[in-house]
Image (cartoon, rainbow, N blue to C red):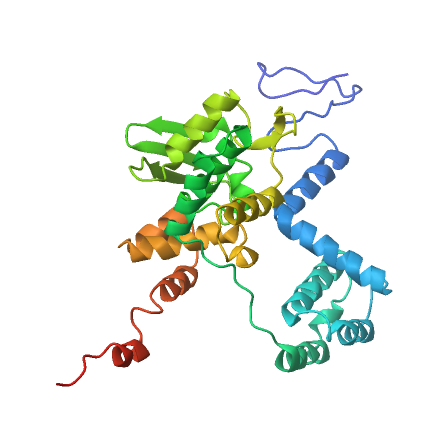
Length: 338
């Protein structure tokens, strides 16, 4: 038995045969596939770093004895238990993680109550602490590190020199630095162009381009990178990789935590005294500070660092000119009266 159609050229469809599900760009074959794709998109909406931070906060709450889902009273007891030992900003982050868990699990958010928020504000007023900032690595200090590494033999020295210079002049975050691959590089007459497929401020994957000019002083990140790639014979894959104690270069990229360790070890070996105050963020802060002092304007600094918020860049600039535009300095450096 077949259906009739006014258009005689249309093929007939047997009614007694099942219609097969067809997967097209606009449809999914099964409800299970639909659910899986939905879960992937939900996961992609949150960065990996944020997800790890939230999971850590949830584990901390449960290790304390918290049970999920929880109520307002449990959240307040948690805040009171850790108010004497944790930075209020850390507690605020833990509350955000708890709020996210409850919302996405379909439960009422206990952290949203006025009492919880007021409790946190009180903790901030009583126990508030200054935000710890990584000390900016100034250009002259980076030059000391690079000059020292030039005297050290071995592949690790070549890698570390390239990594620190590229991280500094490219103003890369450590998470970006360790994910750089050969395919992202474009060598040009003026220097090196790097295209980041994704970054902290570009979660949608529009891409971020950074240009690294050739240098004619102690530092030249483009030349340092070329020297490292040639010495390590890296033609594809991650730029910066682990090196075993026997000098064997691995296939996988460095862990982002290694950037802090490399900076600390190399800065200490170069004789810098501010090592305890440094972290990988010192590279980005240092680029902004030193570039401003060298005459770079606001937009140049913001573009190179890929900063989204103007206030962040203005903060670095204010730090750079703290002793230049200083009311006390006008008095202390005044000419003596004759």
